[in-house]
Structures are given as C-alpha cells and as structure tokens.
Length: 524
Image (cartoon, rainbow, N blue to C red):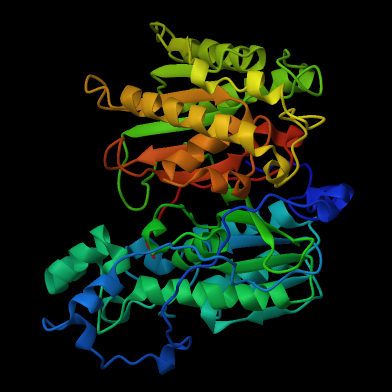
C-alpha cells in the first residue's frame, strides 16, 4: 500500500506551529500533562533485584496493597524538561520477529531476530520515511529493534543512539515461554498478566510499573537532546508506555493504545511561553503499512464490536457549515473505499452539510459492496443523524478566525474558548453514551458503527472512550478525512482499545501527511 506524498516529518508541516509564531507567544490554556507519580526502579536489567519477593508475600500491609493499585494521578506541574523549540518525536515498533511468529513471550530477551516479513515491514517503513528529515535516531539495543532502526535509517549519516531503557518490558521468568506453557506453568500469575497486567507480579517485580518509570526516564533524555525531529525505534510495550507517559496516562492504559509491528506514532512537543514542561499532543497513533480495519486482534483479544470515527473532508469555505469541496469529495470517496471490507451496520453523522455528504458517500459504497460480484443482494446500511454530533452552532460563536477541519494546527484547541469547549465536551458525552447504547444491540453480535463529524467532536468522543476529562482534548489532533478506530473486545461499556488515531494513508497523495497502517498485533 505504498504511495507517494508528503513526508511524515520535516518540511513545512514539521510542527505546524512553526508557521504560526503567534502560537509560541500567546498564553495557552493549560492541558493535562504528564506529571505522574511513578515508583522508583532501577533502569538497567542487570541491576534489577530478582530475589525480592516481599511485595508478593501474604503479610503485605494494607498500605502496600494500596500502593499496588493503579494511578494516573496528576500533580500541579509536569515532570518533563522544557524544549527550546517545537519538537516532533516519531515512534516506530520493530518488524515481526521470529518469536512473534512462534507466539513466544519475548520481553527484554534478545534471542529473536526479524523474520522475512519483519524485514519487509521495516523496508516499507523506510520507504514511508525516506524523505523525512530526522536529526537523530534512538533505538532499543535488542536485535529485532536495532535491525529495524538500521533499515529505516538507511544511508543517513547521523548516528543511531542505543539506549537500554528503550528495551522491551522485562518479563523475567515468563520470557521464552509459549503462551500455553505460561498458562500451564504459572496459572494464576499468567491470568493476571492477561487480565490485570499493571498489578501483575513476577519474581518480585511489577513489570508494567517498572516500564512506566523507564519510559519517563527515556523522555527526559529524548527531550533534552538538541534536535527538532527525532526517530525512536523500540517495541510494543515500551512504545505504549512512551505514548501514555507523554500524555500523562497511568499504567491502567497498558494494552489500550495499540502498537502493531512497524506501527508509527507521532507526538508533538511545543514549548510554553513561560517555560517549563512542554505542551504535548498525540498527532497520530499506530500508523503502519496495511489497513487499520484489517483482520486481527486488539491487545491479543478478538473484538466483535467497533466504532470508526470519521472526520469529514475539506469544505468550500474556511469556516461554517459548508459543502465539501473537490478535495473533500475525493477524501470522502477514499474513506468509503477504505471501509468497503467492513460490514457496517449503521452510519451516524452530524446533521451538518459536510458530515452528511461524507456519510452518504460511505453508505452508497457500503450498500453496493455485496453487488460488486455476480448475483448479489444489496446490503442495507442504516443511516441517521445525531444532533449531539453537531458542533457548528458552537464553532460559529468562537472568537477563532477559522475552525475549518482542513486547517487545524496541531494543538489548536489549547487556544479555544473554555466556555465553548465545555459545551462541546458535554455534547460529546451525550453522543458517546448514545453510540455505546447503539453498539450494545444484542441482536447484532458483530456490530460496526461509523460516525461522521467535525474533528473536534471526534476528539471529544475519543477522550470519552479513554475515560479522560475535558482538559485532555488539547492532547489529541485529527485531520480532515482521517479515521480513528476503536475496538471493544470485552463489552461496549468497558474501555475500548484504540487501534489507530488520525489514520490518513487511504487518502494517498491528498493526505496530510502520508502514513500507513498495520494488521499484526503480536504480543510482546
């Protein structure tokens, strides 16, 4: 699914703030940042004390029990070092490894190498990033990741810095086991690893907690480096931890923000005018070589319920409820083609003009899907509008010059009026509950719902899915024509697994920027 287009990093869109200097001088409204209470652990594998077991003894105090509980508690200030100028960090997971293919638990062991498929995935990522201007590359020292970094880095002259803190999660006695061996040998502990990983204890250690502490240490080293664009090549779990800790999310978000083989995630760091920890925005999550709707698991579990958040395409004017322009029409058609292989049960759109036009384009393709072969019966797709997805009445009252979906800068919501943002947030809550009610339809064991709206309402829905507050809305970015995929492997009212955010590879040369996505969800 290779296609030519704008680079992921570098050029005029490396931090869209760069072309908007007013954003660097005006007072920002604070957003939730990454000051989390982490426990202190050693950062080198050989320094870890494998003999300690006191924390798992039956005589642990109530205070110890409380200490084991998960937390993403925020304090008054963030813990990250300031950045001198806007910085973009691109995270890539390594390609498929031999132990991925065998179904072995890898952890931080270094016995596996890239498979032929993994080499091909790394090459695809190299092609995807070939025109991008990186100042530096940080890599895990483990062979599967370091090899991926070498392939992607190609002939660039800058060095690759290996850092042991970027190694995969330390899983101690679990490492090297096949899944059925782990179940047979460890029973209860293995089930806890599967169901309650943040509280999972092995050999006297809490691996996920250690990982979160290590990820925070990595960010401090990455952010103090004198660079504006950074490539980081590491692993599934550590990349999850890097995304989560950057955004201020605790260990309970482990296995919620998917990282597929060679998946690419992008984080933007923008300096505060007053100094201190930077503003942080997740620009995209888990963009890799194949379709985000391809068959596969979410965090190791099959999901029969899914919500796809579609941002309508670009419109005729800079602001207001307008029709799609030619580019927006192309974007809506390409989104419809991307969703062709999904058996969509219902399409729910904002009553706005552009969302309705986008929803109708998707519906036409869906209803024709089963008739593309001979002697087929048309598929019926329910289309309806939801008033709570409409935000143009609110956006029209904004003091901002433009809130067009095609021209939103990364982090633009940090300058949005709080009163209006609160209205949008409240509306997203009502809409999210309605969507979950729709998804819970027991007559539809496999249920896929597509929603179409303005990026700002989709950001609200994404934050609602993650059980966040209004303050986190400025921590996400969505482009016109992009999609975000949320799977529900447990139940609709349980927390969803975010398969990708701001995916736009289907737009080809019209995407801003070009990215690609993955289907493989191999465990660590």
